[in-house]
Length: 455
Image 1: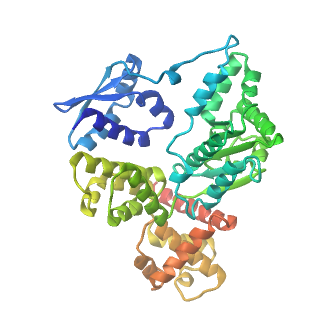
Image 2 (image 1 turned 90 degrees about the horizontal axis):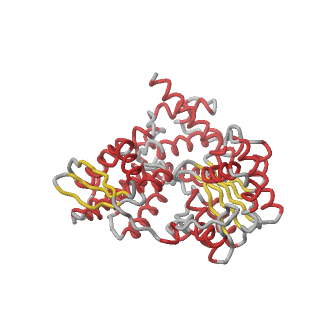
Image 3 (image 1 turned 180 degrees about the vertical axis):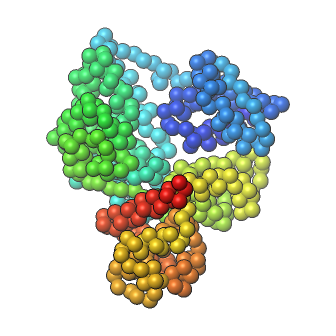
């Protein structure tokens, strides 16, 4: 097996295990150059990066490589020259310290991931509202949804939608800037130190669409929030488009200034949930095609059933299987998939807080102030039916119980009834704010119950 191919496979897995900033800083410009006698040599551009990787990521890299090649591997980081694209490495500045317009635009182009397009985004009930709004904004920026605020958990597709908007906008000659909140903060602090705060703000004047990612990282950063607030005001006053993402609604972000929160809540709030089973299978099929590897439906269903918190989990499982298949020149059947993914499945189960079905039933019953016996009875009033459907949904989404198991737990109901109940909650949760809130409160109650049992 060639060292560079093994290392590319390892980078694919490492990208899912470390945050974006660390990957881009320490791993992106590395190469696999040699693999022999169970020693894997990684070329890095500087001694500083070599020392950092050795002290911070050595065990993770070694473990990842060992998993890929099927035996224990010792990793060594070796300083070698790494060729870079000239356009990205140039840093031409003007006398006042600002970045020249030409180079600034080149740098902006690198901020959009070419893989994150609308064509590669799988829409489903979990993301229908933000997906539709994003398409509308890309076609008509500054129109109906301004600002657009997309919120949801890690790996649910928020950043993907930001980049997709950016690609369409740039194709139509709209000037677009994507920034993470962390990046914005760092540049703003640097501007203050250099006494260029006003120039920093002015650089947004020629932007048509501003895409700001992970706004929750601005919590507690008073000066940065003040700057963001004024920039958003300028955009909205000029009918220029703003799209912001966060991991929760603005009102739930601690230490977010009331003026900024009010601005973010003044447009459309659109939430994204983890994909349901069908959407997960669709995602796996699309990404399999992109990787040019085929898996049968049994294998896809297995992955979709065991990795369900977010898309990154799915990508990690798919990368593991596709790498194993490619390096060993074999087709993966269900038995092989279970073997290759066994450790990842085990970790996923631990992280996803499996709850005893009786605990879910009792928690939902308490929330709706009805008895568990009523829920499993034939009673069909609105409140009882809603509680029963939420239980079906949670048993399917969190515990991944089979339809038959759910039916049996809820008084011997058939699989079509269970499907109807799960689909009803799945389709309504993104448009019914009260239902969404109820489900989230119940999830929090289940987590609290889990923690109490573990103490």
